[in-house]
Image 1 (tube, one colour):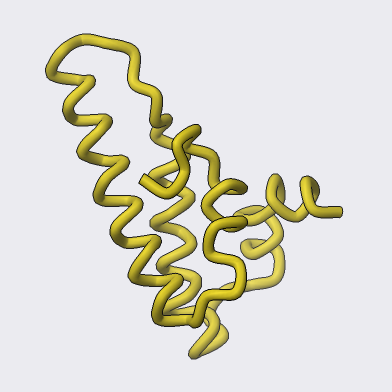
Image 2 (image 1 turned 45 degrees about the vertical axis):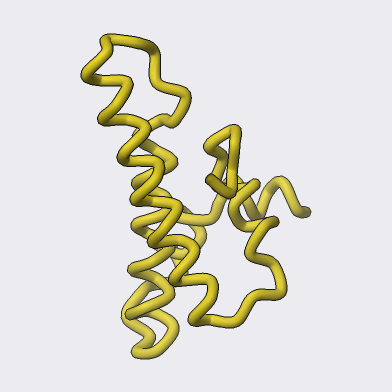
Length: 91
């Protein structure tokens, strides 16, 4: 996995400088791997290192990249809410 600590901020740092296509592909792979980790830990009744919020954040990022950027379907408020923690950490 790209983000060993399952933080969306770490993922964003890792894709900095990547192309649109590379970012979407990496986000898709990361979301798949994180879901597999969650499923594995659920079966073993262990505490999962990947929170559901991380997977949800990745899926929102993919949706944003696929739809909002190309067709301007996402509102500024939604964008701020989605990337709030990342934007605050960079500022």
